[in-house]
Length: 132
Image (cartoon, one colour):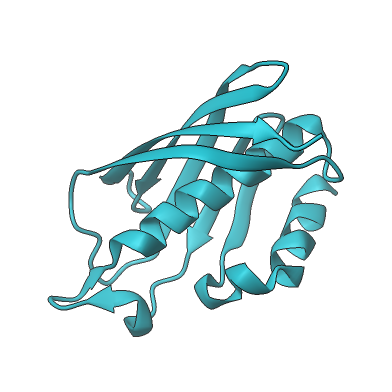
């Protein structure tokens, strides 16, 4: 049920449509998304562009927070730091985000973009601020 709710939220969110994210797995405080490979996301050399990987991390954390607080609750990105570790070329990317600390106002987490076999492409640290 929660997975379907989060996927419906993604499908309604026009700003996310270009990425075609799919919710793969979700549980309280954790979410994995799929970023399907499409040539439009490639930079020269056939490497998936960095902003797409950062969007995947940001979106996966947003949904992990909603999975923890409830779909109707919201939080906004306050800080996002990215380390690019290896190129993602010609394959779907999976991004797994997890909440590390849920404060009264701030939420801290990490996200990893990886291939289906687990090869790590990026590591992200994220801070969100509750909007209520």
